[in-house]
Amino acid sequence: MVAFGPMPAAAQQRMNYVRDAEVESLLRDYLNPLLKAAGQPTSAVRILLVDDRQFNAFVSPGRRMTIFSGAIIDTNTPNELIGVMAHETGHIAGGHLARLSQALPKAMAIGILGSLLGAGALVGASNSRQVGMGGAAPMGMLLGGQELAMRSLLSYQRTEEQAADRAAINYLNATRQSGKGLVDTMRRIADQQMFLASRVDKYLLSHPLATDRIAAIDDVARSSPYYESKDSPGLNQRHQLARAKLVAFTGRQDEIYRRYPQSDNSLQARYARAILAHRFNRGSDAQSQIDGLIASQPRNPYFWELKGQNLLENGQATQAIAPLKKAVSLAPGQPLLRVILGHALMASNTPANVDQSIKELTVAIQRDREVAEAYFYLAQAYEKRGRTGDAELITAEGYFMAGAYDQAQLIARRAQQKFEPNSAGWRRANDIITFKKDQG
Image (tube, rainbow, N blue to C red):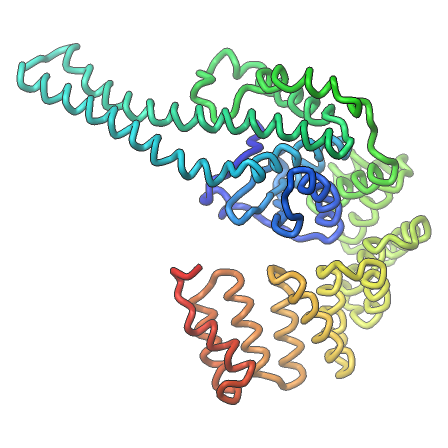
């Protein structure tokens, strides 16, 4: 069952977050028009990708929108996924996370009140020496107070989910996109919930049943002048390539061939099979298939990225540099491409290339401070050039960005000793050393 809403922090910690420049670029192109329609700054919302085949998405504190890989793989058109993201945008624009935190104390108060009433009844039963079936009532009332609190909170969440659905239709209309994809997604959920509806108390669900959600938005979506609007061919192809990439990098061989058999000569099927060859160490075969992709779309940076990645991971770092430079030249704003280029330059082991890797990786970190690999490769590059203090400092910064503050401070203290007092490196290390966890 799809959540499409706020997700508890404990659940987020168990997730396998992954980074991919191509998929993130596509999701950003889906999201930015919706944020503008919602009056939200595009730079303020971070998109996260989870390697999980569930069809799910949620928003979390810090204005983060998390998309499960399953939500991309299982959407047949861009419009279906855009509808999901429009719903999540509704949560962000509506301030639902902040309001949910305000609703929690109210729900707790209701629960406490119910428990106090139950406790009073328990005292009365003890004083009158009631036994038997009557003695069971007070405990039922104690549980009832907790259930009352839960029902209050869940009712609030269902209201917010309905508000996000309505907001999604508004954003889709404002961007001249169809609401059909969102409705179709709800129909799919409704099919999954077919037997659930008759067996559960819908007032104990955090989300309205999909049939109720469809009833609330279907007519509004159909009344839009953009209801029959279709995704552009170019956007649709990017969506199909992203789906193929995720399946090919995470799926089993039998699943990949089932979805993208040899008889399928579409670009996305060829992409999936090229990635499959890359994953299973068919080096020359992979390069041949990737070269075919590049011949079809010579200005696709992610085909050049795959070519370089395949060479790099097969021990040919020097040969990987040229295709990776081509990828960066075609998408200069993508820090993840600079990270893999920096890795190849560093791994080639020539002094000039290592110096260039330091520049590329530094730019990547400046543009995206949450790319963990960039810190690791940059530390290696510094070490190769004998800059031990810089290597230790960037390692400390990497640990710090990952939230491993104790480890970061331990390494920062070691790094600080290698810099002149009050120099830039010394001050950066000192910022980590003097950081207090309750500041975060």
